[in-house]
Image 1 (cartoon, rainbow, N blue to C red):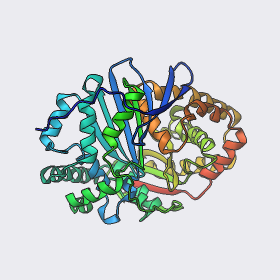
Image 2: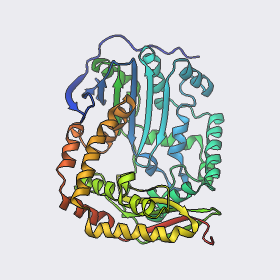
Image 3: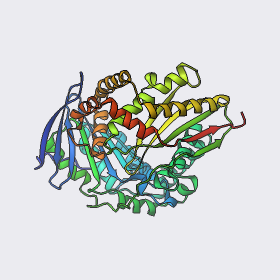
Image 4: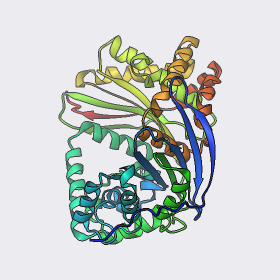
Length: 439
């Protein structure tokens, strides 16, 4: 077995700046430091010695949108393979090392980014940093774990063929985005995953994981000086530049009607259409509009119309889908098969009415109060803080966004939300259903 060295105790020469950020309401101040390693790798750091734990979240811009159609599921397979052996450690030895030193290391593939997360006790940081390094820079892709992880993914895809929510999710994406990468399935298909090879993984890993598309957030018991050198240790062995293919912008298809036949007592419903990207000037106003229409759970218009007044569904809601190269919104519900048409009609009518009229001043005031007051809950644990910092980096919002976010919401006027509601919900509506059409 390989002897894994501990982090050297010398102080590395790093450049960093500190920005005090007050999370709203009763949350504690979050002091973010921008750390730059001697090798030029940047990270955002929140030092916290309350508990002796270090959380490192990182992301590589690109994700499953970088796959060829015939290789859909490749990013997802890569996410399952990076902790299945690396460097001199085969799968069994690598997993044993993670367990021995209580290192939580995981990876996940999104459409626009590839994510990693490492969490460790401070006392085991040397082992944890080294295991993270070899996982992302020296993965093995041995035959046995490649076959095993592929088998697990294919088994999940087979189970998904009878999961109405899974079928609805995939049919909705395909309906809106067609053959664009956003219309492909992050998990792939049985055929595409079955055809993937270790060489495919090696090529994709080399293309996707590099220093120039890397974003890092660290929260916990580590100083800026130590982190500066640690960044080079973990990520310095990656290629300087990623080889990312161009992904075209796309406007979601409008007015599509799709039904997936499945013998069920309920019908799963997805309704939606074109939305906004995160860099749209109206996005904050659109975010508030979405909350009022269907994002506010027990307080939303759709919840009131579908559940409270008519009892047609246990839950109903809406969400925004801001991809890097497109934007969409989705409304979701499930109801009795014989009530599906009624529920769809009510949802469409309420969406169209909201697009035409917008919210009331009272609705806007309540939405602002909820959204600003609730924001602090995103920063009440180190995992949450790290996740928020990575999201802010990927969305290119700037380090001061946390301090400014509630002010941005408070500054939105009723006319702003009405304009955003008209833009978001005023287009043609696509409908996807999964269930028994003969019921």
